[in-house]
Image 1 (cartoon, rainbow, N blue to C red):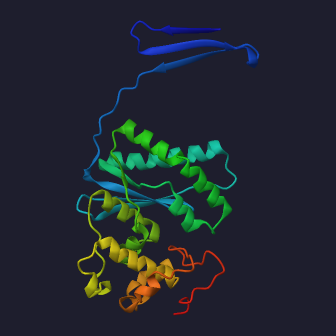
Image 2: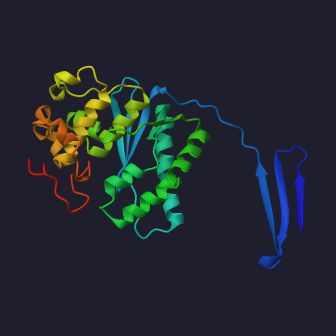
Length: 277
């Protein structure tokens, strides 16, 4: 049995029905139209960049000129949590981030990907985190963020994730005393503001001068992977990347061993012929 009713002003639609297979219980569903909120917080006032890590979410506020003004790391617990608790945790984190955007009157930027790259980075760290990332990839965080941004009129920008971690570690980690997560979040925010990321001149080869910036960063990322350079080593990136200017072009395409860009740990037990160089 089913009844549908509309109020006089048609703002609320109600449906009353009974389900025989559920002990003849009666149910009432109400629905209403939610007016669309105009976007009032945009990138003209800067942007909040977001980066995911295994135990926390890194957030940085980047001013319109590209300089960092505020950072925060939002820890969360995933182990021994129910789905409802995990969803509540993500909603709370989203609410905190959107409140920051409301305070700074700015946009929010996230990486435009399904988290598979993040899965690859942390695939060996813990089965718990694998489960976490699997849940995130289904849209738990993204859906909550998109919904909250619409509700508060915050512009949500999705950026290309290419080399955000590498750029952050080389250009900003030591410069501002950041960790790899907040440095990557800074790059995400800057990218949303359409700011370029130049490679340090001392890492630039003469033959690469006219190439695209990402071509330079691809070479740096390959060198880091090949030589298993840990992220902590990049606080002294000049020393860690010593030898990159004479790095063999042949070696750049001989990455027979997959390693984590964040940790430098090998993904399998194969040994790279360049591992001890």
